[in-house]
Image 1: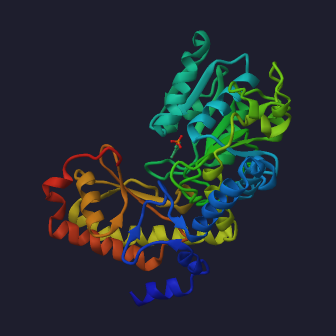
Image 2: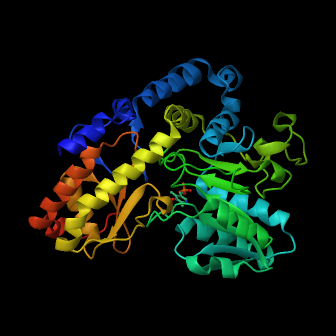
Image 3: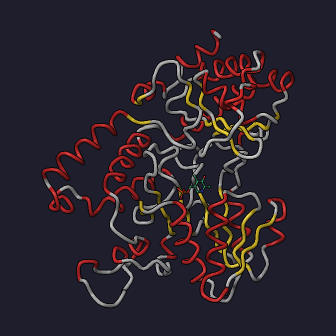
Length: 407
Ligand SMILES: *Cc1c(COP(=O)(O)O)cnc(C)c1O
């Protein structure tokens, strides 16, 4: 344990932990699903509600620069994902942004009909593709193939490939530059879902020659429950037309013209009025993570993951946990997944010991690793508490056997 304490003492990111509301004793391993609350966000929200809304009322759209929030926050997120200013906009949910990015990509490939993804991708990604495939007389086809058959499936019919960079269950990470190159060679465009990447692993969209990307505001960006998401479109695709042609994507929203004319640049990917309270919380989270050195974040994430995997090794042998994440750090995102026949009950029993992870059906336990507020000692302590849950068979309790509405 002394060696592990020394790792915490030498951690260049250790001071960030105090910037979060986290109660003593809690080990929060679910920041990949809902990030913790930054203390600065409390102040920011209070300011936005009491001053900007309460006092400023409608004048705050200009005076408090609400109107610029989607672009301003987009430019900040751009710095985290290897994009330029003017290529990212903060808006809508990840699901809606997937729809917009896909429809824009399809509009650029009008001679092709297939939307391709990998089997087992995050459900909303597949659902949005399935919805689009049924739209407008079923002009498009949805196709999902296993990960190792993706390159073979890239034929002349594929218009767009949609992939999640870091897999939501296993944390397996795609080689973004290589996959993008292969898709382009086959004449297809790529939409990257960065939900489990942004703020956790280094991403270089323009370095990878990416086309479109989307990502989540409430995971590693700590933007709060249901925070606005973001959309990236490479500059060369800014003439593409997303189907959702709302007034905030118009060239002159306050011209109140009868006919739609898309705004130049990334603004055409906005749709309706931005949710300012959510935007304020998101910006606070993004401002915080921008103060952390991305290389240090990544290095610490790998260190925490490796330590947790090491601490879990004896539990795997004794109690039947099975690691489902890759161990090579170049192929791994920032969470660790195990399968276990009693996964759901284990996660519940662990919560009673103040370790919060999550369960993904049918048998996955996920431990999210957030370098800004986790410590190396937390990895050792989490494994110690899980051992108690197993040894004392705490997961067998009746109340842990029925699934809750949100897992
Ligand atoms: C979390 C997540 C989403 C979330 O989509 P919402 O529209 O915010 O509900 C989408 N895709 C992936 C890969 C995710 O991990």
